[in-house]
Image: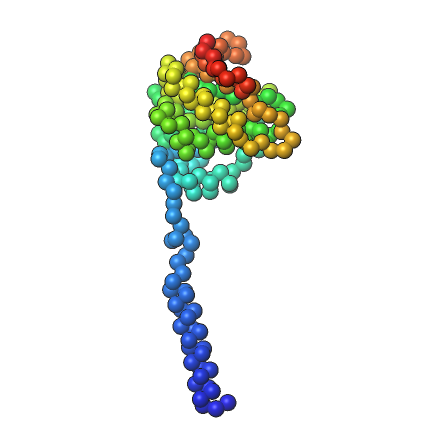
Length: 236
């Protein structure tokens, strides 16, 4: 090879090296490029285990507090869905600083929109209802009534599981009813897995926490009710 050819070859190599270095300098790692999408407020994901030997307070543990869309999905995609939990376990997602207990000041005068999932329904139904409502809640899709909302609870039980949205004031009837209507619309508009029956629920029922604590039977008279099929809500 002549000296000219060697120089040309070396020049091509140098040019390639320069281009590679330029590309490297222009490339920013994904972690640095990632644009986070903040939520309007922070939320805490809680887990209640099924240890019957421990007291209720010791069974309840905060899992993670998240404040961005990316943090939420990083958590959600790495934990079991509700259908994967053992009986007597709960998931709770509440506004940061609010504990998922009836007794705390933020919940003491409140109530809950309750969805009962009958025993025997596919686990995908519970997972779908939970995720649909959870995304609506942390995405602030309840408008001005977000101020009333405290959090979301999933109780996994052998005789039938429950998903409930807690609000801080059971007497705020109009706001609670609007929240219930949003819940209904979200669930009726959800994409249901093949083979699962619809609608996802029969009734949404609103109960106050105080009556739930004092109940002598298995049910509490609902203060508000919304049917999956009827257009008009009921005030009891």
